[in-house]
Length: 341
Image (cartoon, rainbow, N blue to C red; front, top):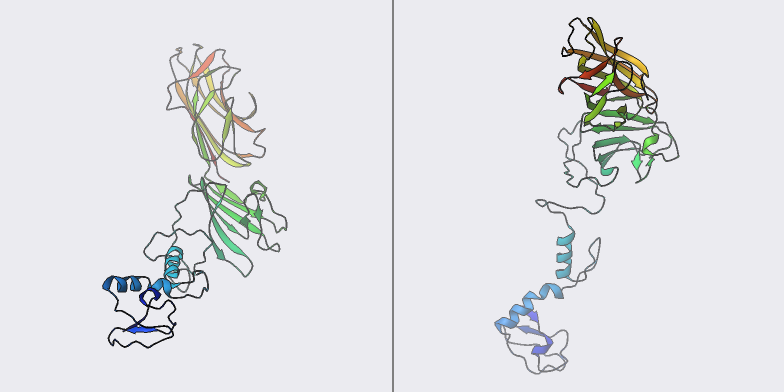
């Protein structure tokens, strides 16, 4: 066994680089200036062996910049991905995919654990053609898939300006939306996709309460469910965007007028104030001369809203008989709005 002799173990201060100490043969080739040597102690030999990797040169190549073997091993450990480790990638990575069915599909097993902090968090990309990609983004309320559209942080931009783009949005509440975009060389805002081809599932629900006069006032609406951007102000509900909606109202109603008979109506209207455009009426006639008597009335309509700011949803009571009409209880009084297209 042979090892290069450290300078501090040689009596001469200037041993030659070719000087060696042979442990199994005490002979020592004489280099320039070498006169005497001594045998290494166990501690000295251990030090030499432990530091051997740091003494071996490494030629930097690829992503390894270290110039000795020990530093190269350390660098590799800090930069490699471990098969059985929870890896955190800080740069874009490309995966060929694990094919469960080699003939038809590619399944890439990736787990994203960081919640989106912006509008769209980029998750993955796949090639559709040589110039067009499909992408998946996470959002705060669901996720989005696009074809030929990439998010720049402020706008969407097409991979190929010669082809149309499409966005498929899925909400946690079951809402689904398809948004196309004609081919364009100009980036566009997320609000500037072309007219939706289909959307369904966005829901809002409100508790109906309070009372109205037979010919004035609207009922109080208290939000209980809002999953897709509906807004309410002054008991007027504005849908998030133009589309076709299913609107259903139901109430248990009483009338202070004790005439026999007396009519009681629940009106469902579109507009910004009473009376608006009435799109449905639920009514009943009371034939008992008692203000304590109540009856349940309901309405359901499919209605297309084209201008949400001007076509708000409101409900109110009306009657041909003077007096005050009021809701009874709480569970029987509600307004449900659902986007169907």
